[in-house]
Length: 61
Image (cartoon, rainbow, N blue to C red; front, top):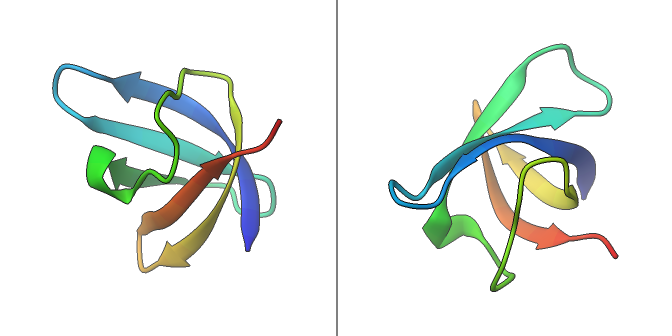
């Protein structure tokens, strides 16, 4: 699992971007990739990288 921070999330459209701790670029995600009920910008998350997208996203408490 990789870790990063939510840099943008539009709940009404169900899309967002995660800035990976180890990579310079942001990865996109869709609300269907979330394992958590609620997520906000600046939340720390763990996820699986799939190409230029993130999947299996969980909020880190």
